[in-house]
Each structure stands twice: as structure tokens, then as C-alpha cells.
Length: 148
Image (cartoon, rainbow, N blue to C red; front, side, top):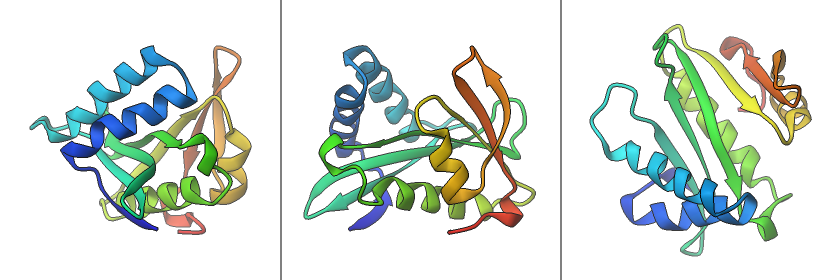
């Protein structure tokens, strides 16, 4: 499996993964956000895809916070339902963390509604707040990041 940067031709396939994991409304939102990578804004995201034998199995995005460019977010970590539990998401998150670590004085946050224990166990994220009772706002000390 290869982890590489998203290309414009990948947007539809990645958005379809979100549609399978969530719903059509989220799929449309993801497609718009994925296209933002190819814009020229200062906060343009970067997306990575996991590809095997020409098929996209998952993707994840990173981007600077609008509030403070030294704070980075990981978002849209999605893997094709039939391909989950193979370590694809873990590889995508690890690649994302490695990329963020290249930035001087970077800090990392993410919001997890589905699998916060996964991020705690594999990467040592810490919950810093609960949002709406179900979403966990999580942080990772980049200098202490493990498994990357």
C-alpha cells in the first residue's frame, strides 16, 4: 500500500468513501473540502490517500487552524468499510503527524466522535474537552508523538 498526496482525480472516490461511512450529505461536504486542497488560500488543507493496486482505500486531511497557524488539525480520516481494521487509518494518521511535525512549533488537535480510544491507544492523544456530550476534542504533543 502506498500513502501519497491527493490528486484532483481522486476527489470523487474519496468523497464516496465518506458517503459509505456516513451519508450523501456528508459526501457532498467532503467533496467540497477535498477540492479546497487545490485552492490558493493560506489555510488550504493537505490530503493524503492510501492506495493499493490503483484503488483508493482511505484518506485523511491536515490543515492549519484559522485562529493560529501553528495549531494543526487532522480531519476526515476515512477508510472504505470493507478495508477497515487493516491499519490503513493508522498509516494515514501517522503520515499526517509526520507531516505536521515538519512545521516549527506545531501543535495538533482533532475532533473525534466515533473512535477516540483508537487515537489514545495508538498515538497517545489526550482528550481536552467534550463537545455536545459525544465529540472529544483531542490534542497530541508533537514532540512526544509515538508510532510515527
